[in-house]
Length: 262
Image 1 (cartoon, helix red, strand yellow):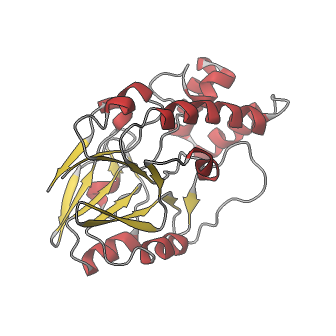
Image 2 (cartoon, rainbow, N blue to C red; image 1 turned 180 degrees about the vertical axis):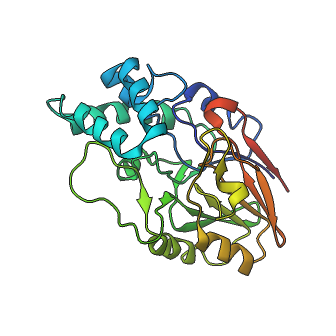
């Protein structure tokens, strides 16, 4: 059995269309959308709506002060007559291309930079969307849990917003993990909460990993734990007991899937 695994596609449709070549199945671990493109400020939803100069300003503010960055984005939304409709239109445009590029049996879970409320519109034969469900592939049990995890004690934002990331409390994420039961392969967007897997050496910050996932990896004997989310990790893999924990890579930039053989 040969399975290709990608994460953090962020709009790279051309590479995604080639990702399943030679594979029996493709696994997608989320972040298909390109909302803010930090490499090319003309691209992504914000680049399309507000132009590269304003995306550059947002990127700088996000590095310096997250609160100022959030306030700046709110000011940009205020310039649009229908910010939610404008964002939805561009998201659907991306999803039309991204989901349309998948031609092999595909098993996908959403990342934090996704709109899972829209995913049922794209479900079809050969495209299975999973979040809190497991599936058998080649005699192994693959368990999927999507989204990113909020820091403990931080509540999800509520109320209307043109765009909101898919962020879950640790408790909600634990419910999704428990629904998977015993698995041979953990398939999540976020890593388990190990510093070497969560620290981004370019952004110079620790992304939030899942303590619940770490606990369950230690309590089971899965072959692999596969994830993305951290684009430039301090370490791309670690061993937890018998489980090989692997960041499958920032697919938007590498354009190369991680390959599983068994």
